[in-house]
Length: 110
Image (tube, rainbow, N blue to C red; front, side, top):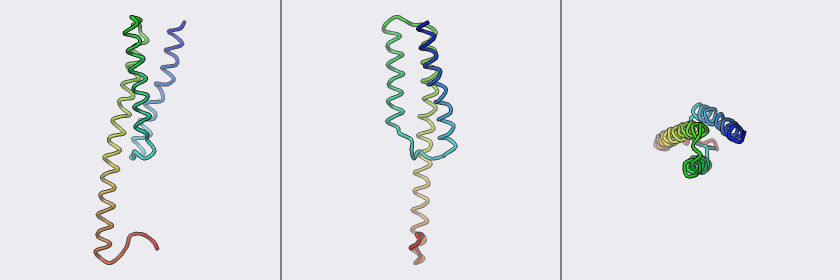
């Protein structure tokens, strides 16, 4: 029974990671995404996996931990993709600002 409850908890958490990755992918920005939060959750899953292995309690629930960790890996990939997109957008905005200044115009409203 304890394994079922642990698996239920992991599945509930695990379902949120693909949804979060999809939402962040569609947003196209890392703004509002906390890498510290993702790192803390990653550390938690790694600790759970280590606890299962070290205690010798390797059951099918370990597979749920691993699936969740893979889904969390997708969140890391989307986070770094979005950081690259943010950097490219920032560079483009700076280039437009320089062009406007060179023409004697400003791109900000006074």
